[in-house]
Image 1 (cartoon, rainbow, N blue to C red):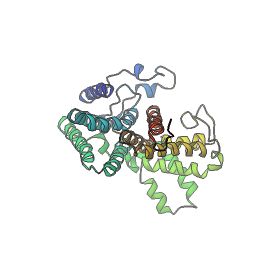
Image 2: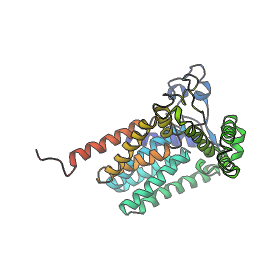
Image 3: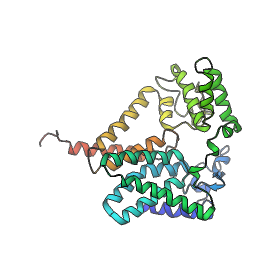
Image 4: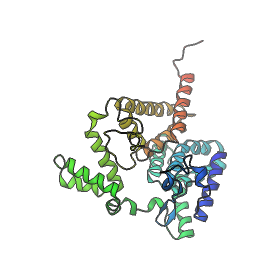
Length: 319
């Protein structure tokens, strides 16, 4: 909770000043390395507003961490009442300010399912109220809506304006022209950056004989210039897809099985259900982002759930 409160303060300063508070040489371990200057010094802008990132390399890390943090937010709401509710609102606001729609969508879906599970719809009202408060603050301060409501970078026009996106869509149209109708291909292209992700994954899915067993190789997408493979490159595949594509069907299937099993087990125990929500919110986010930093926390939650289950399961033999 203390760490998230400090993070909230840093992000609020960045929002108010529209400048990054933490210098790039502290945010990135590869600052000054030839070839990474563009990544180290870049400033992320959407809809003329800064996308805050705090001490992290980019805003996706902030979004992924807050998705995992939904577990802490829900726990605080239950255990600390008023102060916990204030903390939860702050964490919800951090998530939407990060400007990653997959992260906000993941939190909304996970908390909606949680509210249905515990039969407390007011939990969903709280996160919606936090989004409303944050959006009103942006309207007052900047006369603009939150970055998650900006749709310009999701449009097909934006996709066609970026060469790497256009190359993916062109290759997809050429490969699937004989398999899909022209209307379906056009429909996928019209989805903009989302369509690029779909097109890229479908092309690699058709190339399954090259990766199904052991994958294309670790980092074949993340470092394609250093790791030579037959992988069909496309922009920013989610880390869930990366595990399948880089490590193979067995590794990807095991990873998904571990997550689903942990979530289902966690929902059996009041003390662990919060962690199930955090894992679910992150998993949805991870379908669209390859940010790896939150994975450690997710796996920690998985281990905590399994340990708790091992200690409390009903069929545990008597000593």
